[in-house]
Image (tube, rainbow over all chains, first blue to last red; front, side, top):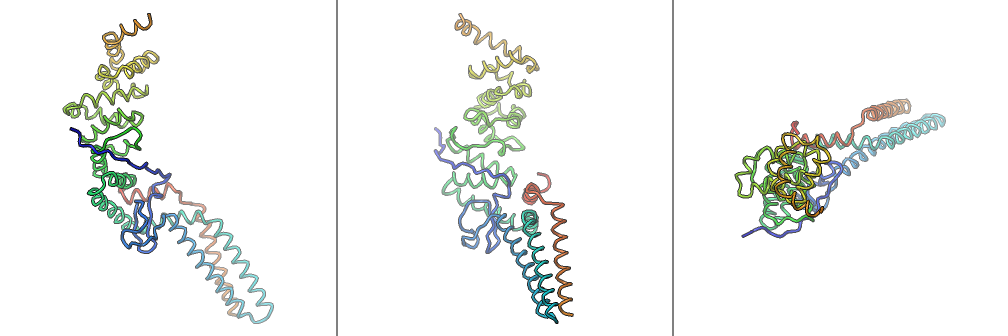
Length: 310
Length: 47
């Protein structure tokens, strides 16, 4: 009996840059990559993106420089001994200030990026602590809402490349009833070693969203084929992945032996796609793939196709 | 005398700031650099 939960997972918000996921509390300096409204450390609603924080730091520096300029200009003007000297001091001060403002405006973007990088370097430890705190919150969330815990792990996993986070995500995903309308991902979850849950997850993805099964996922399955065959549904996983691989002629060329071994078990439409691809591009078939596919075609489908064509 | 002194300091201050801005503009930090820095902080040099 299946013990999988029916859940709904919110779509993952993809950002152009990784640092756009990161926010920092303006009060206590706590970093987070989650979406909470209030800082989990001080409880205040003062979270800002790191870009906003860098901008405000640059603006503060600009204001400080202008203040120094104004003070020096004012002192120079005040202590002018003659009217001419006072006027000249005021004019020069204004001119220098205008030049400074012009350069500050022109360099704002450059300075902001520079400040962002400097800020990240300065707050290295705080960033690590913030992400660790986020990770600790996942454990609490998992007790009440596993879908929420998965969403939190997905956010953390977009910044931290860590097999433990990946495995936790896969374990949670395998406890859900997956649907093709869910915002699922595969590439960021691939592990360095064999893991049964991941193999099963790839098999499920290959059936639900074959477009997510790309070269690295097929390579993972091909590498651990022997381990997967020992699973109770190993053949189904391998067949599903081989069937997903025939989507592109590139994968047929890259993984001929995997496809050769499981072509026989593929659904008819997938097999016929493979057959037609090999007919169109005979050069893509390596390692006896064409012979094997031809043999299966003759055994299983030749007669039915001959009937339809007659 | 104070006027000249203050103006000299102001002039030097503005010049130093402008040179710094110009140098920063010649070697700008890209958003990808910031990304790399963040990934290095969180994942080490390897990733």
